[in-house]
Amino acid sequence: MAKTKSKYKGGFVRKSLLSINILLVIFLFLSYLAQFASPEKLWMLAFFGMAYPILLLGNIFFILLWLFIRYQLALISFIAILGGYSFLFRTIQYSSKTPEKDLTNATKIMSFNVRNFDLYNYDVKNNWAYNFTKRNKIFDLLSVEKPDIICFQEYVYDATHVFKTTDTIKKILNTKNEHIVFTANSRNLNYFGIATFTKYPVVDTGSIAFKTVSGNICIFTDVIINKDTVRIYNAHFESIRLGFEDYQFASELSKNNVNNTKIKNNSERIVSRLKKAYIIRAPQVDLVAKHIANCPYPIIFCGDFNDTPISYTYYQISKNLKDSFIESGRGTGQSYAGVFPSFRIDYIFHSPIFQAHNYETIHQELSDHYPIKCYLTKKQ
Image (tube, rainbow, N blue to C red; front, side, top):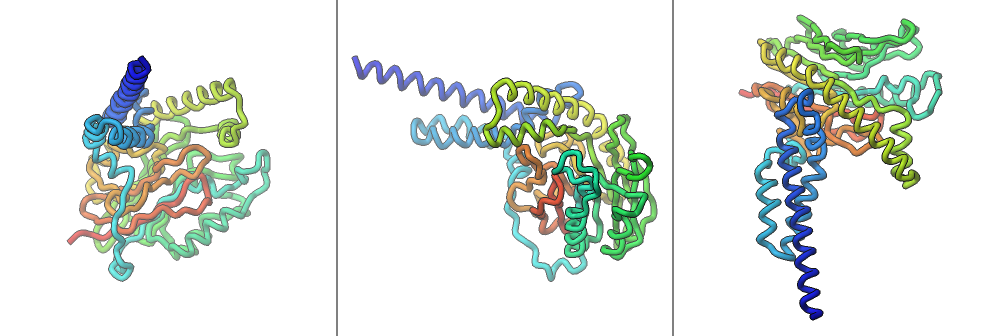
């Protein structure tokens, strides 16, 4: 009788585990579909795309579990992961490094959402005095890296010239060439926008305005690199716009200092903001993707997408471009440095005419994003 009960209990546990495994597989396949569906029409799929790393780990867990219980069942998750193997390459890489001596004539690219250079010190609530600490550290980083092209998102210019940015950056990079577009200002003193600096001659500039009041934008800068005209896109797609209460909630959650009611209310608010951002971002992406399709020049595309590699945003922008992380990156490439789980949401893409080398995320907490960089050479 005891053996019968034990056998029944074991069978129930196995069936329960199998049901959970099948559910995770279904969710994993839904995450694969996220890149094809515009969140304007199917916003729910975008959440599955964002959850891909968790779903992947869950399925890997079941593969290992079934190997010890009933190895044949490990094929369920194994086949599911294999069916989306290309997504693995977007998530994790281990590429060999190109020796520095072979990159003498390469173009060094950087992209960095500087969060307004921490203008008002975002770590201190209601502190409206200028804060120079992180700005100066960013300048120190630029002095070391000295990129040939750098794209800033959430750029700021201070008309009072107290919080200097543009002139200092031009001096550090030893360049006279910049393309800056401001989309908002505070009392006509601090101007906020997006900026591209380059040592290469600029022959044309333009912008792709989004039909939103958010201030997000994409600009393009045509430059001459070794006698070739190359178009540099610099994009900042719709942000999630988390508020102070969201960061405070995340901090409290990490310390296990919140009750169930607060978790429910705050989680619902964050999900609502994510949903809104997904829906607003989709037409912005469509607009830029159309512009890329009509571009007559080779492309270098930098930007803060506020979206993961398993997303509609990534798929639309990368259709005819190469991801420098996939070509030459290492690790997971996580670029978000905020209080919520870290994702790769900043990118450097390029036309197939180029080859990427030594993609790297610079893990210095100078903003809520990490700067990213790589080298590009023209294929022979």
